[in-house]
Length: 275
Image 1 (cartoon, one colour):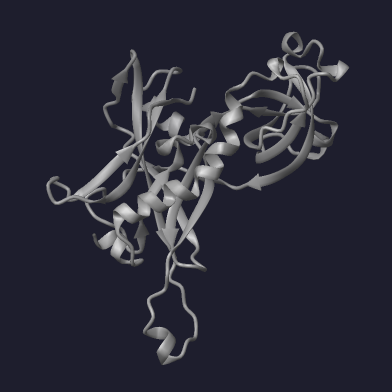
Image 2 (image 1 turned 135 degrees about the vertical axis):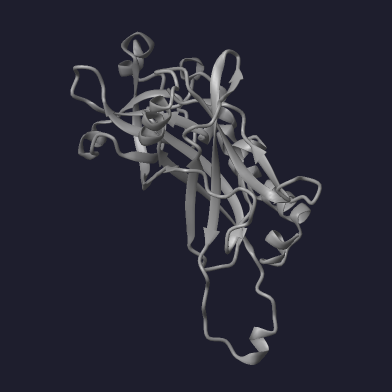
């Protein structure tokens, strides 16, 4: 397989290696399926995707997360609209959380945050019949039982990915789509496809002749890529999409398959409601 041969590894080995490497991530977010109200001790759910927003008329800066709205006074310095990965602890025995469900948000202690850059989407589908120069196969971890990070928050799409590349590589991400596509209907809601592509930069280093003869070993990397979906939503609505109830699938390059007309094998995530 030429895609994987570029970095010296077989596709089957890549998938096996990736799954083993993300196991610790999966284990770390298993507790996300629990409801916060049911926990009796201090709770640390790991790291979650989040968007800074102002809650109602309170003027409080909070985090909108897959677990609900979270408040810590330290968030007052975070600009509204920022995308983060946030870690926090939650104590259900704190008197401030007595009426959390009715109030609509939880008091937590923010342990740390990582600012996430937002990328735009590309209107006009990149050629899906060929491999791009220096393209690597990408596995959105939502496709291998790590769906907790695959979320849409305030029109920001968080896409967790795992890929193999050479050390020192810089990745360029692209999420392209056909604005005139006919959506697939799933549960009476339209599902639009977007294609995730990952291209690694060329790496250069000075080595002697003996070192040059040794193939460089690829490494497994994991990342969370955030895309601003507002332009995509506006674009497809211009071409007839409904004002709400829009779902998307992320399609990703798994490898090459000579039995297919395009010669490429594309995987896909489950549909995700984004507005």
